[in-house]
Image (cartoon, rainbow, N blue to C red; front, side, top):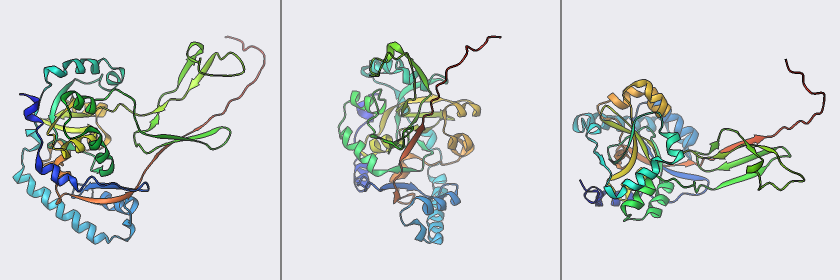
Length: 330
């Protein structure tokens, strides 16, 4: 089966998505939020804590819209029974094999996918199960613009499975002599394990004398691969929600993804988010679970503005020097 036949543009999705990819301000972010999913109390709390003006929204109206969407999901259990299991996946084109081999040799890839069986395949986007129930339309819109409407097969592969550095902006502020805070708008920003660097690695340090060692506190991001977890003939999207939504919005029907295969519930703890592993029965047994295409269904998703988030990592350094007798060994 040729890629060209599977990545043809779908006009209806491009038209529907055109009104969804609008910019937001720096203080707020526009989201598409799925309604009607298990967890009504979580849905209400999300509005009061995250949504702009959510405190003034009538709880009865929120309950009504949630109930209406929940009823629609119930209808889909009959009309789209087996939809999640019918998701298509097939092997990469031969022209992409070299890129796939290089990807699997990448150390970030090996760190991320070394524990469970995996494969790199072309996967149907619309029928991916989703456990993240919102997508940022501003971010998705910028991604879609960056990719363009007619990417080559190789460009699409690099877009979905990049090995380069993150382009997310990062700021640093010194709070005091020993405290620093690093900030990013990316929710993927985090600290990495500490490491000790030795003299040969420290030529960039300009100090008053020879430097022997340094304690390095790496800050950065996780691996940025479009990936999913397969079980019971279903695939749940694990990483890359905004890219997957952007591609679907452009009318691209299939994309290269890393698919990890899980055959036991315990294996979910190694690969899946806590939302999926804690609710495995819902995602892999429900008659009609939430799918990526639901974000383009006005009966299931609504557009809202939320207060924008940022991720901060604060570091406090304490150093003590002392001189005394050599410690005795036992």
